[in-house]
Picture 1 (cartoon, helix red, strand yellow):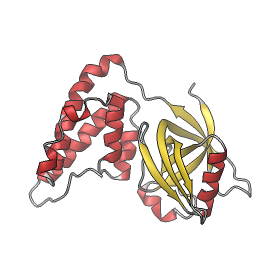
Picture 2 (picture 1 turned 90 degrees about the vertical axis):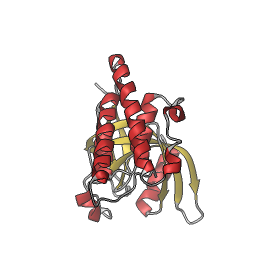
Picture 3 (picture 1 turned 120 degrees about the vertical axis):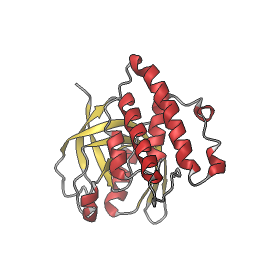
Picture 4 (picture 1 turned 60 degrees about the horizontal axis):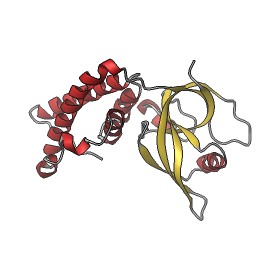
Amino acid sequence: MSARVEMPLFPLSSVVLFPRVQAPLHLFEPRYRQLAQRVLDGGKQIGMVTVPPQHTDEMLGDPPVYPIGCTGLVAHSRRLPDGRFDLILSGMQRLRIVDETPRPQDRLFRVAEVELLDDPFPPEEHERVAGLRERIIELVRQLVARSDSERSVEITPELFREVDDTSFVNSLCHSLAFSAPEKQGLLEAETIPTRFDRLEGLLSFRLAELARPGETGSGSLH
């Protein structure tokens, strides 16, 4: 059985955190100022979860969230004079919400028991993933070329030579301009090869969309 831990939740509508990726946070609501202080005083981990689009108008309350998220470890923190916090989170491990913990009166933020999930990468899939990696790099190059032909020539396998497969796919899933639900689907992939498959599919679909007559858009990275 996977490890289970209790962890504060930080729901966002537009951010999907992936393992091995860093993300900045600016916490200004009273409940999240309290969350930041508790986290900095304790284990320094936050359960980052995403709110489905149909519930983003409920952000001031406790909207439903996708059950799969990612743990974020506070790599850097700064408390501003007015009590707000700037944090840099490092994505550590995917999580699945098991159950939310009842909230005492003195706690403003949500807490849940979560199951920590692995991202398996079977050795027999390495050769197939190598092919997918080359295909993804070419698709990204084609997308960038639609808006910046000069920059696109820099996107080559050599650019990513020092990046391992897991960091490569997670970084692209995070940085490419997909919608939050699309990124959520990438996060929910149960293995690294499956995440490569889904990323390749999304990139291929995006290029096909942009190639249709009358379609405009950008494949730019964030």
